Image 1 (cartoon, rainbow, N blue to C red):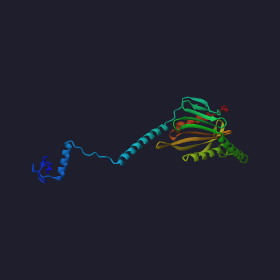
Image 2: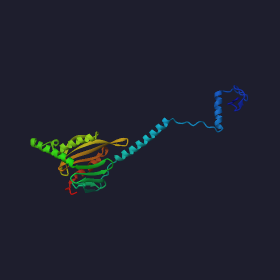
Image 3: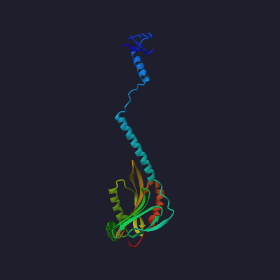
Image 4: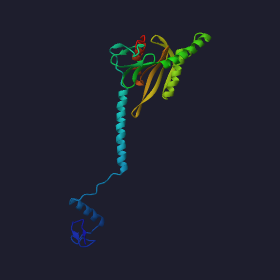
Length: 264
């Protein structure tokens, strides 16, 4: 059988020189010409199949991109500035132990059981909130701190904050918080203040929270107040980037808390 001539396209009866046009035949060119002729006649080349690892890698990259984009959206939402209050109202806690001044545009939640515990949450956004937790258990801890402080006062006279009941309880709850949250870190010395007209201590702190594939750094103020039957653990916290906008609002909320008489 002859070969297809790459020059004239006819079948040659000889193998080295085309019997039709007399030109030299080349095996490689002949095969290329034959392939071209086949495709011209409607033939198709085999479809290339991607290796499984290429498909898997592409899927992983696509999924990772979706996660990153989604996380960035959530982080942006979580770090949005708190809305500035346009009006305020006074709301009682569930047990009516406290009366709280609340921005009307923020969420307000309270629960509790008289003589046992109470909780107040004033919130806007994912991480921006003021929380007030009072409990009989912390009240017992406050009694112990008060007893130790009284003993120290009798022996030493006027006591520094660390030796007073509010300071002792504040440091105890700091150790508890660090046990629960390894990212919790206080900045500077604790300072004296009042809460609902009662002696208290507070510190500023930082911590982090996960949002999708990222972390958001939070800044807050932790306040401790031993108050007889109840003792209070109070937090005001927001994303660190928004602290300057949030801090005046939180200060007004905390300064506006008064005792309510416990009629709940």
